[in-house]
Image 1 (cartoon, rainbow, N blue to C red):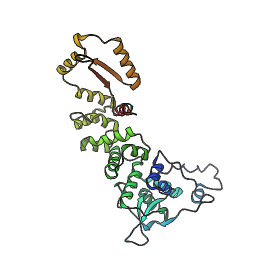
Image 2: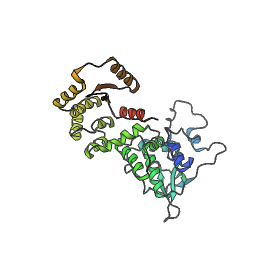
Image 3: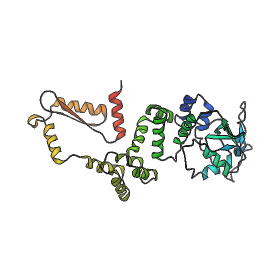
Image 4: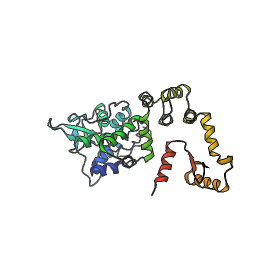
Length: 327
């Protein structure tokens, strides 16, 4: 059976990391399996099970091992394996379509430690399989942990906080840049940067995101507000949207009326003169280039000016930074 399409950039990222396409295919999540045909429909002579288990012409069948010879990985970053019932049913119906990545255990003969695929292994146990397909490699602890992180970061049930902590570990422990992580995970760099920013929130707010009480978008609007926990509790109690929180967060960050009045007076220029046609034209030009609301005002004497950009969220901020720093 041909390999399922690889989502985003994960396969290429791991191939570049380890130089091993087979390892990449073992870590890349498999494509969802179509449900079996209804009893009323005619069943082809070659059933789904037969096609699943029969190797393609010219290809060797995958290496298999008894399921009891595989042991959970000590470098596994995931601690919870709940909600695998659908995977168990798929394995029971079609078998294990994707191999499990393992490495030999030094202190136990004929035993192997799971590097990637522990969810599949647990599902195979519940489905009462006797043998499972594997890819065996000799991998050190550092690469084992890194592969486990990459695999788990691709899981759809991973919370934004777990995702952020995974990215942070790849940066802190393996010196990856945000650009490298984005390429490896098939994400945008702003997505990686914005996700990591969630770790700037207090632990109680992070836990609310982990439990699904707050979305990642809601949580990001709380970064930098005076009391993010109080605002988070209000968001849950009043069912506030991201837009509601943006407005409230903006109000908490506004300066006092006195300071605002002084700034407005200075922005008007000497004598409070209106902006010239050239200034307004330049503002419009900048707005079209940046896609933001722009305010350009003269300040003091000579040609000293203040340029203000109204930025709605961190995604816009990243876009502006990319445009202004592009060479």
